[in-house]
Image 1 (cartoon, one colour):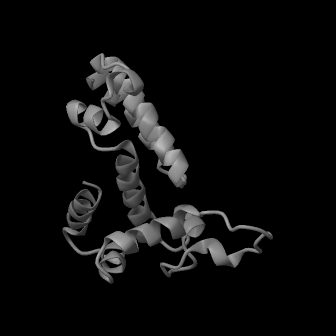
Image 2 (cartoon, rainbow, N blue to C red):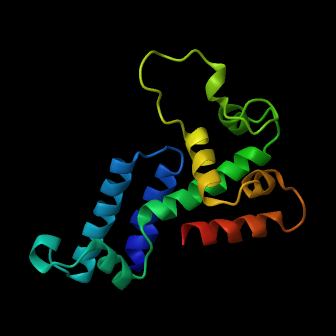
Length: 158
């Protein structure tokens, strides 16, 4: 389990932190992790053993992988929000020195709009946090702000 978490999950979490996964993709990633854990814990496939993925995750002592990725994405969002206005990370995420997503500054193509990383994370945060708490925590630069942000994100994705 230690090697799986260190070598596989950490790489996967790191690589998925910068893209937005739609619901079907999140389910596939969660299924992949559960399938790997079944092999490690020697639990037969679900259609044979009738053991759910939630039970497999509970036996392994892990929370759903999509929740872990969401936590890392929120940490990266705060890092982008606190960056200086000219920083490339901030320029790709936000418009100027505001917390408005960069999405509306370019010409949009015809058709269904893509689910863009910054706007989707802000929407997800607004749904899960209390009304103005997200904006306050994202822009907070006082002492202990990083610790408060981590505590709120841990409560959010638990």
